[in-house]
Image (cartoon, rainbow, N blue to C red):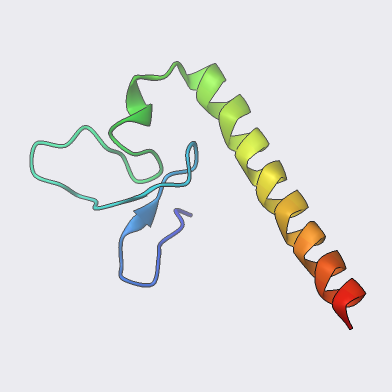
Length: 70
């Protein structure tokens, strides 16, 4: 299922950008923004995996920093 932001916009699986879907004359799909649609599928998959991993690591570092501050 496609991720949505709080304002009803979609979140691109590849780059994490928020975008409106469906957009008039837009190439965007339910899961990929208009900028990323031109990236080859295999490359988009790798970029999506890397983006999610960076988000996980960022959250982990933030939790560790909060724990160190206490």
